[in-house]
Image (cartoon, rainbow, N blue to C red; front, top):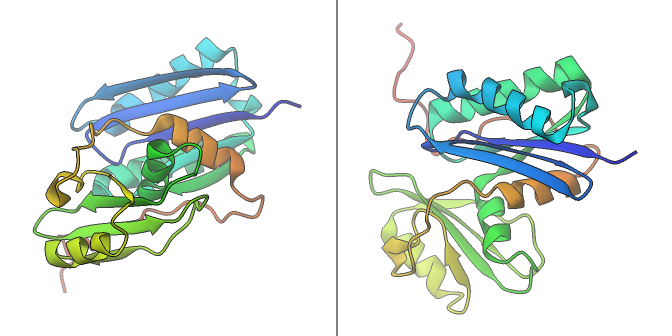
Length: 207
């Protein structure tokens, strides 16, 4: 049976999703800022209809787990896990940095330094060697990020923090094709998705 895959991305200002079944793929992306929870379900419903699928036809549901917006990551992960529970599909979490690395070098032939600007002077990055889909996540200030990038001077640089390192700025669009590829190649025993936060939430429960 041909695998049917849905991926969603709500970790930034975009609300985006894509569906792939066999060689057919369709996608949608809207830069909405906020309101992902309200927009995501109708977007997925429309994409499934376009692909000629019912929710129960899905075999895997991939979700961008971040780092990114705290609220956005929770929306995407909650939606993916809820839909997986209802349909029997496997929910798979894909990190933003692996997806950006795959987008920058789909053939996996180059080293890629993927960096996320977490604001407040903090950055998160990973160095992906050729052919790698996983890499250690590091964090620090701009100086530490610059030093890490300098250790692999020939690497492609991508992500929201690329401009801070003097590289071409990333356009910020969700890496949907990369999310589809990484969701398809995830192991059968991949754990359920969970948000990957750049930092703990600002709000703390009262004593």
